[in-house]
Image 1: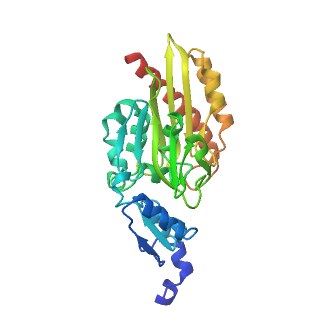
Image 2: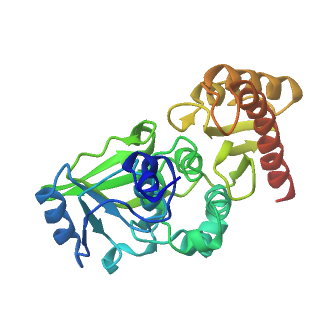
Image 3: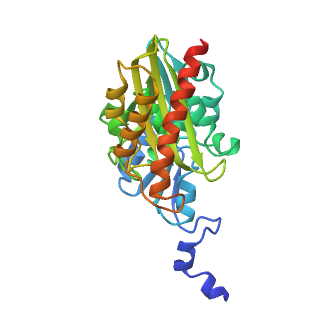
Length: 307
């Protein structure tokens, strides 16, 4: 291959050259208002960046070619984890590593703690953000199933004001969300889970730092072996992260026994819509989902028994 062939744009489009082969203007606002004004000014041509662990890769591969990058890195008011009476608020610029090390997340939101801890490497978690992880809208996003079972609420803001979005309504397709072109997600609110409940998170991937073939989060509360509350969500098995409501309704007010476990596995297998891609096959995802349901339920039950 000669130099001219190497430099052809179509070749660069196919290979990660470890450079960003497009021209763009970088903006570093210091307030939310300034960021929103820039987003409105360059609407349709701009993308927001926090840690950049997803967007920069996409730009290197020319999957995304924004003409303007608006960074949230200097907006200090977006970097926080705040405990309130009913839950916690996590700012859009809060790093995954800060969430991983948070005492309140570890103690009250174990599934989220485990999910964040499973994302890539410490170096990536020192750069990436929780809000960035969901705004990238990968069906395999590790943080999505925990946020679904905890019934998180996203705050999206534009120059006219803010609106609240339920986590279950946030994802609309692979790489797509319900955000408008002039909106920035400023925080995620996560209500405390029911008292005496427990949660778990599991993930299957090709290697430890890879995206999930399948991931799962569930929340369980039971009394005298009868389920009082049950929530379950899976990722990488449908166009969006998926909460399995039919399985939840089935297991509530029933004992945790072999027959009911089998039925929940069956329902999950019927409700998911996996595909075959470079990471796994449709058949494998469907089969391993059933195994992960059983494993995650057993982990949750054992946690409750130890309390």
